[in-house]
Length: 430
View 1 (spheres, rainbow, N blue to C red):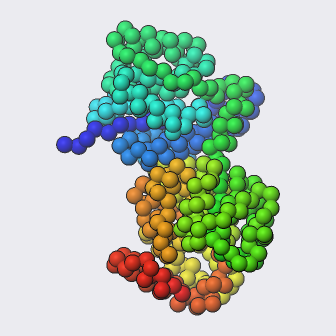
View 2: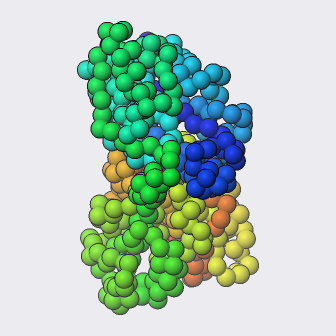
View 3: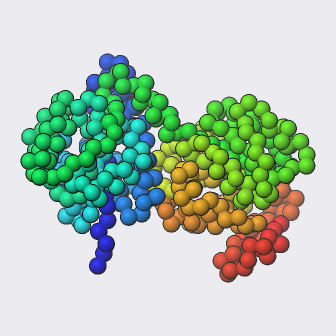
């Protein structure tokens, strides 16, 4: 018998200028209000999706008001969506919750997309409370609520409520009491309805989009300066150089404002794991020192990881220079990425910090650590490849022959699948 799953429901609206966050239009204008709504929706759905990856027993449902599921997929970049029922908010909430319980849900939590401060810890607390209470609410400062959770059906809390008024939470709690349901409340949070709510909203959104860039190095004094110049211009949250014992001027070259240089154990996997344990960003981007990401990489990372069902991403592979064999190798890499979603480490791998630690980081092998980690990531969600390319130096490839190096990589992958130990595969490196 299939075990009942918990369900996390996100209720949102398709962006339509003049129809989203209308009370903010005097301050932001129709386009600005819709842009804020879209950003908050992506932010919240991304956090909800991240929560379900950390808690596989919880399934995610995104219900969209307005438009069609196809339009919702086009807006959010993928995933499965359902239309909300017609009627007022109470009717739509009741229908969403009733359907989840009818499908066998054990616990159901519903959130909107107007509270960017709501994060994975809030969701975890809500589900935990439902083990000892019938209902849980996260109060909003304006008298409503930003989250409601139920351990069983309770239609009464959605009936005869003055939606949009200052007494929504009180009326809902009273309805629960009349139905003899126990209620617990989480800490109050601010949602975004009025111009005065904007500063706190921006701070919450920004904190959920911070990026830590991790670069493992070993004698990279020549490659680092142009890369760091490009990265610092994008103003990431932090850049961590994980140096595994360089004997050249790598560490001195990297020491500049905005860059942290860490002395780590040798070995690329150990270097990256060491730096990731000290990273503070919401997102992690692992880069090789001879790979330069596209100019808009911070926005690409954020939008990709906020796409429902996405566990990680990487940039499209492209060489610098114009060696006659580069188009062939690039095409073969593109084909492999499209068919198998297994990017190379020098494409720049990015994912949420919480998922990285949940999965235990890179296996500390001498080779194949990034390949194996991506295979593990695929079990949690889709690994997406961006249309924009990261430019990788072809120097090391050319030193051993571009096609020969590519074929040697495929031989190493085949050996890995056949169970050859990583230490032995390391002797096969170009």
